[in-house]
Length: 222
Length: 218
Image (cartoon, rainbow over all chains, first blue to last red; front, side, top):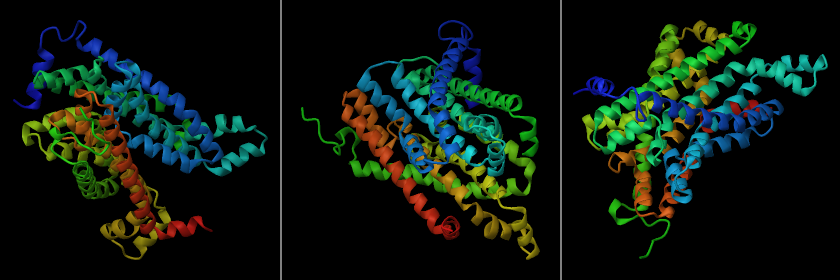
């Protein structure tokens, strides 16, 4: 049987669309873990990226930090924290947050650095305080790039949140981990298809956000 | 029962710590190199025919979204529990990072520079390799750094498909024997390898773009 056959077998299985192990429940769990992890990552990375990008200081330190965070193996971190802290949400959240912080942080910094200095000068020239320069000039201009950083962080979280299932949590990874241990390939394939679909939906969401949030003037300039 | 030191690998893995490191490097670098070799022509096509870039980006984003674990499992069907099963998905992930990095890097080449190359009689290929690619080197290396460091850490997931995860194999032993030191060993060794490879790439970029240093030193 090929992958499509397995996927079909998975989606046709009885009881797949309801109940505690049904697709809607697992999907919702997956979205919840991902949203929480992304929220934490945003709270950490966005302010730091905005301020360092605005002042232009600490870029090297950020790059080193981002590389270190990227080098930490998500799966290894999950196992290590689970051994040290026992089963819980923290061992799941730490690797996911560590995954999303580098792209958000680095892109935000780069986006702020990339804002045309003459715009910033002009804004300062008409007497705007630094926080209005940041919020009303730099942020709108840098927004498309910042959103793309958040997007890649979000997609990585969505596709990696599957590892939560390895330490007894729910989410779409449940199908993959259970399928692997039950040698039920249909389940593994089905889980993978669902995760990929969710990641695509995430992509679509960010496309929509870009349309809604980016000022038309900035978009025209692209 | 003696629990062994940091560099002592449990005997069931039938490997030494250095052996695992070498294996980790192989599982990381083969995909990155293959990815680079494949990404260069793809980027060239995307540059030449602009309309294929959005669909290429779309397809690669879908690939990136498929969890590595699932891709590993799909490939067991064809390649068994072998190195290839880990290397092929990692190559695909590498492409997702490298193609946009190269294309965006080449897009940053100014219109004047391109026009000058054209006026000197450079064809598309020659312009690509002698003008656009060198100017794009910093962007390409930024992509290579991300691809390399992520690959190093993704390799460990291979542990789940029958101990194909190099240093990641230490993780299953850490859980099974409840030996946190083994998990520390895996996480720290992988992170250190990632940072070292990243440093090497930064040095390589400096060597390849001597003009960049002059520009910033003015």
